[in-house]
Each structure stands twice: as C-alpha cells, then as structure tokens.
Amino acid sequence: MPSDDFGPRARPARPDPGALLLCRADPGAVAPTACLLRDRVLLTSAGPRWSVLVPAGRPWRREGEPVDRVATGWATALAVGAPWPVLALWWDADRAGYTLASGYRRPVGYIWLTDGTPVGEEEAMRTFAARLGLDPAADLPLLEALTRSGPGFGPGPGPGPGFGVDARARLDGLLAVLVRAGVDLPPGLTPGESVDRLREAARSRPGVQEIREPGRAGSPRPASTLTDPGPGSPGTAGRGDERGLPGPLLPYAGSPGARVLALAQVVAGLPLTAWGLRRRDGGWIASGTLLMAHGALGLLYDLGRPRD
Image 1 (cartoon, rainbow, N blue to C red):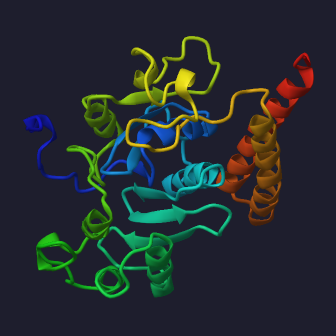
Image 2 (image 1 turned 120 degrees about the horizontal axis):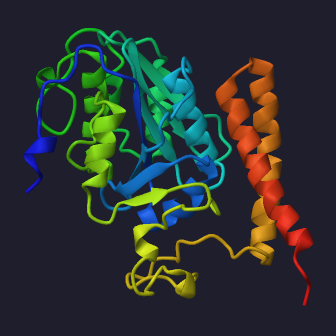
C-alpha cells in the first residue's frame, strides 16, 4: 500500500513550476540516454514499458526561465537520441501543458491557462494520438474533449465532470487516457505538485535511479549497477534480459557503434541549434549544443584512443 504521505491532498492554488518526463521505454533503456541531459534526474518505472524522470538538481532551471522551455528542451534532447517518444508534462502558476517529442520530428504540444482555458490547436491532439498509437475511435474523442472550454470531464477511464476544469485537471484527463496505453504514475508523482514533493515521492520508490552527467566525480551509479551482475548489466550488454528484451545499454566507448552514435548526435545537434538561434529560443539552443558537445566528446575520445 502506498504511504499516506503521497495520497490525495489539496493542491496549492498557485503551484510552483514543475515538470515530469514520461518515456515510452523501460528504465534500463532510458538510463543511458538520460545522461544526455547533463543534469541530475531521478528515474523510476511508470507502468509497463514506461518510465518517468523527475528533476533532481537544485536549481533545476535558471531563474526566470520558462518551465515549458526547459521541459521541451529536455524532451527533445532525449527523443533525438532514442527510438522511443518522450512526453513532457509541465505546469506553473499561470499555465500547464505538454510537449511530445519523437525522433527528429517537430515536437507537438498543447497549453491550457490556469483556469483550464485551452490555447492550443485541436490538430495537436490528433497528432499526439497518432504518434503514440492511441485508438482513434476510443481515445481521440477523449483527447479532443480536453481542447474544449468549460466542463467536459467525468469519472471513469477518460475525461468527464468528475475531473474539474482547471489546467491541472486537464493534465489529469490526459493521463487518464494514457492509462489505456500503459501509463501508471507512482503515488505522489502528480501534475501540480512542487518539484521538492516530486523528488520526495520518486526517492521513496524501490529501484529508483539517480542519473548524473557521465564521468562526474562522485556521481552515484544507477541502482541496477550496484547489485550483482545480471541481465542488462554492463557484462551482459546486448544479450537481453530474462524476458528476451534487448539489452538497454548504449554501445561501448570506442566501439564502431559508439562512433556512429557520436556522429549522429553532432549531426542532430546542428539543425536544432540553428533552429534555436533563428527563433531566439534558449531551450532549442541548449538541446542542440548539448547534443553536439556530447557527440564531439565521443569523437574526440575515439580519435585519442590507441588502436590495436
């Protein structure tokens, strides 16, 4: 049974900015890619083949930086380096919304004002449903209800009168639809909570991993690497786990696969940075620069590595 500390409670009228990143992959597959963020995050399971990342750094964003820009930058940086989509849920005192990033495709998102007024395009919900493979007959009407003003939520598996109408209730309605796709957020990891409370809830989860910049002195290793070697550990990379799933780790440094990945990161980072410069958007610039830097470091390591 979950602790009462993370049970239902009244939400603050004007919440502090916060964000959650949902990845459509198991934690073992997400952990290596999460290092691309070069920031501290907590990683835990969020349902079958889903994971959730929670900001763990202090501060986790620069003062005055819009939370949607940070969340979008993180989601984009993760998605371009992975074969699975990343959904960023974010909120602040005035708005709430989501951004879905998937590969090299343009991210899609939607925004609600704090009172629930929709300010996005309805087409975004159709794109959202298509990219996640949701049922166009059963799920899409529930998503489209979230784009209409006024009461439109209710109890059961999707939106209806029981959910309320404010921005955070709209995110709850979105998550209610995603339950049908396997999303099961742990207790306490709820849109509208403060980042401190999200961290507290994530740290209480068994098997939670803290991810930091790779190679940083004193960086704790993921919980899965602190136990005896087993499926999915470095010694078994690529051999799969007991369920027959692919091994989660990225190619070894210095291997041909690592060189290809590093080059792909540089190539992906260039257009992202250029796009950010044209739009004067710090989130895109940061994502592109991060990818290029990570890829360049990999290429430099490979060039300086002694050949057999």
